[in-house]
Image (cartoon, rainbow, N blue to C red; front, side):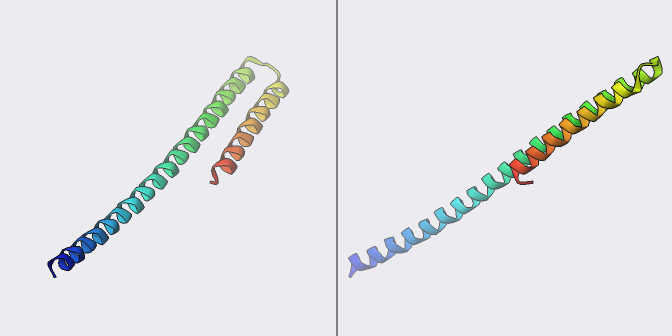
Length: 99
């Protein structure tokens, strides 16, 4: 009958729309996953850059201290402390982020 045919058409249309919705949902989940990974990667990169900047500044201070005749033991100790802080910060971030 016409009602059965119309009902079959609606069922087919509903199935098609459901499949389309599922595909869009899956694609959206993938986009969100990639964005989260990208944000984490950017955060880790920024942290590495900051650590490198700290190390460079410390090396510059160390060179200035050497050229002015200041004690190298104090400079070595300060550089070692900066390196250790940077290493611990990176380890903690990479552990937390799963990198």
